[in-house]
Image 1 (tube, one colour):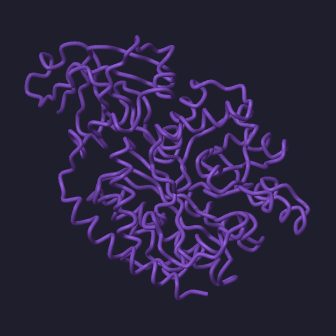
Image 2 (tube, rainbow, N blue to C red; image 1 turned 60 degrees about the vertical axis):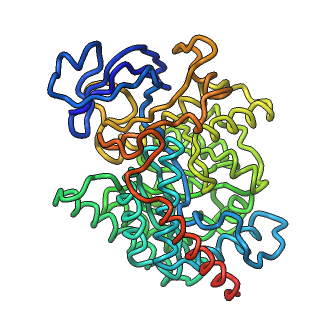
Image 3 (cartoon, rainbow, N blue to C red; image 1 turned 30 degrees about the vertical axis):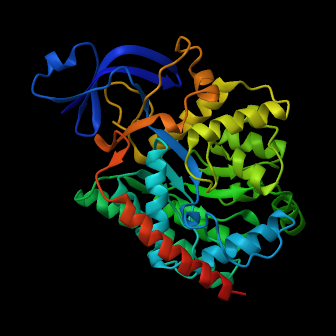
Length: 442
């Protein structure tokens, strides 16, 4: 048993601040929150928090760990005047250049940096067309090595290989889901990684692919993780070829449900938003990525029932993402205040609740011990009513002191228990090799 002594407990939703309390953790679950728990459990190990902020673990609800070795990329990238050319010239060449080694180190680097940013879980969306079979297991190995919780899936698409590529992508999603089921039943490894059924975007998944995805969802019991309406092209493509709104088309194949995760959604129709809300599905807003790709802004965030926040591959700093989401919204004349974006950030834990079959997102007895611990000495009173404002205008990832996942303090006093320098050294070699492979691709 572990006790975090003299903590300042902070929850984003429902908003709560409790000062000078203890948190008792047994195995992977919080068993009690209260006063003087070191006296109640005299045999327990304990760590003095000195009033540090202890929050439910932070979740990045949409990421691309395959992009982990793209920072400062030195490859011959043709001009990218629009979003589709950015995909074709950069990201679809990068993912084709991934092999097992580069993917593993990309996963390791992204997992390390997620933890350092205060994330306890990341929901990943993967693509590596030249390395499909087994790729999700490689990513899972990286998650487990670092101790990060998360989910991943393969981006089913026909953009490189038609029907065969569709089949291979779906088969990898099903294989991985079955691996997770088997590993969970066996119980020899911590249950840290779950599966979604992945698809790239409606404009690269024909109806034959949607039918395959429907069978995969039915077979595995998982939900779909897909981009939709990130750019106007996705919408016009659907109307031109299928005569349908994006989500209406997906719904015809039973792909919109309470485990469904739609990334972006900038140009969803009003009917699509009604459908999303009726089916209790999630939309993940990725403010910095949208700005970086110059795809526009989603003016309908206040209409979304289940809004979460992600990065779309721009790291895993969710404190920063919340700030950008709020400031961009204000710049666009939106009506929401920081508390709405704090709730969206907290909603990442609701995605874990639905997919892991456990309780995440609150510091109460019976909830998973996934916790983010921060050094933060507030210059003004820290209250339930203003915690979102403290994050929007102050508290950030540079305050992260320690991270607990599944009851284990995997990052303590800004240190891991393994050699990060060696991993970064190997990652640089893998990145250089991958960039060279990119230049060899048409």
